[in-house]
Amino acid sequence: MSVARPVLAIPSHLDRSQLLDRARQRLPQAFDADGHLLAPILGQWQSSGHWSPACSPIDGQVWAELPQLTAEQAIEAVQCTAQAYPAWAGLSLEARTAQVGTALQKLREERDLLAGLLAWDIGKTWRTAGSDVDRCIEGVEWYLQGIDEMLAGRQPIGLVSNIASWNYPFSVLLTNVLVQALAGNSVVAKIPGQGGGVSLTIAFGLLFEAGLPVSLIGGAGRALSPALVAHADIAGMAFVGGRRNGRAVGEQLKGSGKAYALEMEGINAYAITGFSQWPLLRKQIRAGFDYGKQRCTAYTRWVVERSLLEKFVQTWREAVADLRVGHPFQGESIDFGPLISAAKVSELKLRIDEAVSRGARVLYSGELVDDSFGTGQDRSAYLAPQLVIGAPADSELYRNEPFGPVDLVVPVDSVDELVAEANASGGALVAAVGCDDLEQAKALAGRIQAYKVGINALRSRGDRDESFGGLGESWEGAFVGGRNLVLAFTAGEEAAPGRWPK
Image (cartoon, rainbow, N blue to C red):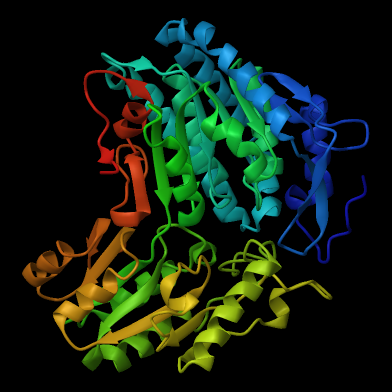
């Protein structure tokens, strides 16, 4: 299989041809004779007979072919992985801990390979891709050190299934897989539909070498749903993604007796009133553009007391003025690279155009600078920061999380309006209140429908011992993070905390 020539001088450790060669050398069994990647099913590499192109958002080039399982093949994979559960659960915790520790060591040894593959998979810079892999390794190490206490009085539940979004394949998806296995479950995961499949496939190959009972399958969501959600062998389900798909999964799980944690999107709001700490806010706005705001905890709705609107817009402009968007391997000065696809950029531009046609105004529209890209490079997946005001309440831009570098500012005239606009998405994962009066800020935070609310500070998903969840329509089922992730997918007298349907 041929790989397109890079459009600029890529550092050798990030050259995709060299990365694929290193992956073949490390795991030759993961590739067929034609260079297609195979499906890693419980220690065996299987050919699906069908493949889909892995297209890098960095330059729009196809750089690998990923296996696509049919519904029947996916069911076979689930049944096979479920059969491994009794033997795995029957091992002592000491033995499971040792094997998961071996898997972590293999991930550490191949950290740079995995980070490089991940960067091409989903367009992360070398720094952010490495951070994603590191957070997985360091996070699971934390669980290894405390798993004896976390599992006291608990038992594994069986086969756990995972469907997650593409943006954090290691620090979210692979971390979940490893912790679920450490707790005594066998585990199956789906390759995210939009990216991450190459790096995850190689990572699962390393888990195989450590003897972990895990499988990774790729394919269309509708085709795989009977296997990954509804199949009788599935004892638990972890989902991270959008509300439409999350609701569909939730409908299948309600009343099923399966354990589940469904993390769904919400519009995370930063509400500002009685505020004067503009240098602090400027730093927060800039930091918030990490990975182009392609994060479930990105703040994209700014609800601002009208008298502070001019100062806010000035601060926002100052924060993004020198942000550089470009080829993620162009150098350390690049703040973020492409969005996940050219289609996503087109979608966001259409949302902006639709809002503007109905009275909204674009207050800031960043530009792509030539020296941030290679000569002749496809830039269709890149979008610089945008700030919009006045989007109608029934517009796509107002109602839906952008999952990209598009911010909406909403001016308000009262505290009640401030709270209502901050809660416009019917529940969120995180929120923040910017207010000089800390008592007033705390009172406002208590009225905002988000799992975590920062006071003059951003909140994030968190690592290790920090729990994570959502309120309203942003979450169903068990909360995760820290010990909660273990409680969610084990059985015992103590119930897993969470948000359950009434």
